[in-house]
Length: 132
Image 1 (cartoon, one colour):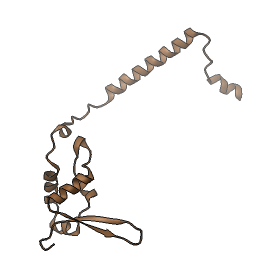
Image 2 (cartoon, one colour; image 1 turned 45 degrees about the horizontal axis):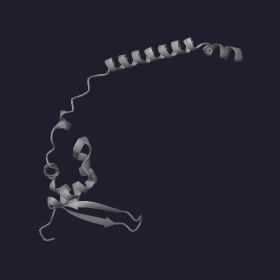
Image 3 (cartoon, rainbow, N blue to C red; image 1 turned 60 degrees about the vertical axis):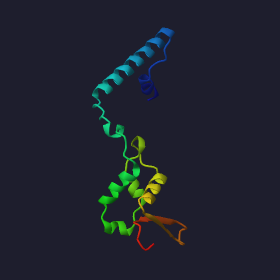
Image 4 (tube, helix red, strand yellow; image 1 turned 90 degrees about the horizontal axis):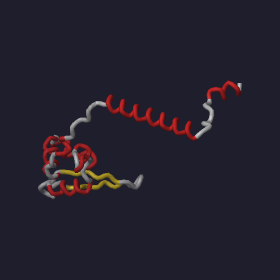
């Protein structure tokens, strides 16, 4: 049994020339595979959307808020939900602190709801009410 397994294992190279040949063969095979892989890959989509200059965050946020029904707005909005719907600089998400500042700039108010049970709190944003 051991003899059969050892037959499949290549023997160690005996000279420096054999080692160099093995390295060259490996390198050529690797280069060929990389070239084949790069040819088979589809063209990357142009990232024009990410290269366009962004409109200021408060303007984009205002547009987003205009699409949300008033009934949903009165129930309170989560900054994390809004953040997921907006694009930030360099194609990422907008910074949560900047998003909060933009909400305040648009007249929204944050209300915290503390919970005694698990010492956590949630925070929702509400449109500014005239009597507050």
